[in-house]
Image (cartoon, rainbow, N blue to C red; front, top):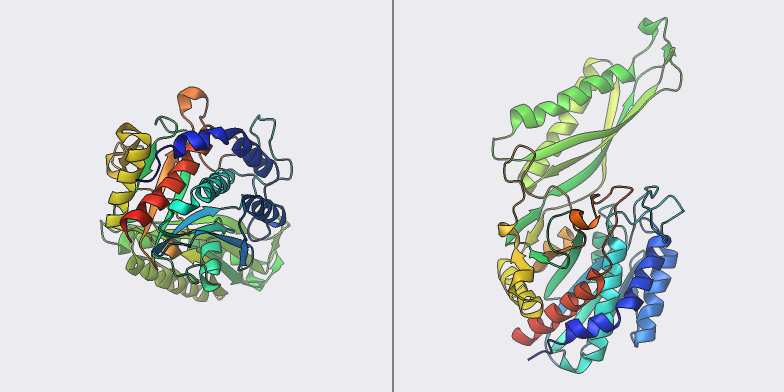
Length: 408
C-alpha cells in the first residue's frame, strides 16, 4: 500500500512551498512569455534531481519513476497569470500590472511540491508520472501547443489529472471536489469582428459608411442566436467584451472592431453558433454597405471527465484526506442568482488533454469568505490560503501513485 504519510511529509515542506508561491505571485508573467517562471520551475526540478525537458513554446516536462514497468499518469499545472493590476493588500503583491488572479501560482507550486514527494518515493512508482508545467492557459492555447510538441508521447500517457483552486466559497479549506463523469467545462472560442466602412465628417454622414452603426446592429443581431435559434436545453453564452472605433466625436471612422467570446457545452452547438455568428455578421454588414471579417484566434473544446477515473480518483483522495474532505461535484450545492442549479461556465484548456486521453479535473477549496477570502477568481483583490499548498501537493502525488498501483 502506498504510504499515507504523504500528507505529513508535504506539511514539512510547507514553508518552502509558501516561499516559492510568494515569489511566483510577486513576479507574474502572461501567455507564452514566461522566462522567469519557467527558469524557477526548471531550477527547482533540477535541485530535486530531475532532468526537465522543454516542450513547445514555454512548457516544461519532468518524469518521475520509470524504473518499474507500468502505465504513465500525467499531472498538469498551469503557470501563466492575467493582465490585471493587482489590488490585494498582501506583502508579496505584484507590481508589474500582471496578476496571478486565477491561482496558477498555487497550481505550479503544488505540482512542484508533488514532484518533491514523488522523487522521495520514486521506488514506489509502479510506472511513470509525467509532470506537465503549462503556459498560456488563459489564452486557451498552452495545452494544445504542448500536445502538438509531444507532451502525451515518449512515454505515451494513459491518464491525466489537473487541479484548480477555488476561493470565496463556503467550503472548508483543503476540501477536494472531484468532477463527475462527463462535461465539466464548456467549449470556448475568442472571436474578433472587423468592420470596414468609409470614414467621413460627422456633418455629412451621407458621404460615408458608418461602421459604428453596423457594429451596433451586429451586437443586437448576435443575441438572437441564443434567444431564438437554440433549443431550450442547449445552454450557450455569447459575449461582446470590447468595441473599438473612432477617436473624435465629430468624425465617422473607417473601421470598428468587436471582440468577444462564446461558450457551449457540446461541440455541435459550438459549431452552429460559430457558423451563425459569421453569417449574421456578414449579412448585416452587407445590408449597410460595409464589409466585415470574422476570425477565431483561439479556443478550446469541452472538458470531458472520464467516469471511471473520476470514481477512483475520488476514492484515493478520500483515503488520503478522509471521507469528509472530498466529495463529487454532483453534491456541490451550486446555484445561480435565481436559485436554480448552475453548471460551471468557466472554460479550461486542459480540455484538449481530456479529448485525447482519460482525464479528471479536481477543485481544491483555497479560501472561505468567513476567513477573509471574499473575492472570486480573476478579481484584482482575490487572495488564496497558502495552507492548501501542502494538501494539494500530497493529493497530486498520492493520486498518481495509487492510480499506477491499481492499473498495472
